[in-house]
Image (cartoon, rainbow over all chains, first blue to last red; front, top):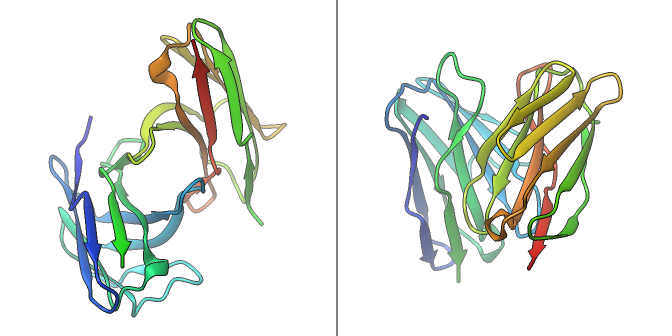
Length: 115
Length: 109
């Protein structure tokens, strides 16, 4: 199957700092990638849809100025959590679906802890 | 609103069979997915149903009834490694995945 690589797997940062998470499609081109957040024992919550070469589409309640998304190439999308706070601590996961495929392929996820 | 319901937690015995149910109410339907997620890891794809009926894949089977807004995932010959959360997800009319909260499956020896 297709491979989506996410980096880093985990990160600890101080309150007020920014953290960048990368999501790469290794063996296919992804015009669209999805960013999810998952709190413990809860469902995957779609944060935003990342579109190559254009602005991301954010879900209701997600602050676009806080969660900056850049999709500059067909194989890379980045999510930057700006001015992180402890409540931003969560599991962040990206996904993409290769053309012609039905299922979504997920990155390994990034465990963010803000202290 | 859109809603997907599945039990929060289930317990089963190694070697047995377990059925995890999922009911959904979504704006449109373009397929139902089951994913397995181990703690701290990303979900991995198990099955996809878009037409009514049963899809079998090894020890795992998935059933869909679109008229009832209902699906189940059937796991046979349970192994300890099957202990995980099982997520039901539906693609709505906009082809966006709507996720259930997941069912935590605990396998006991």
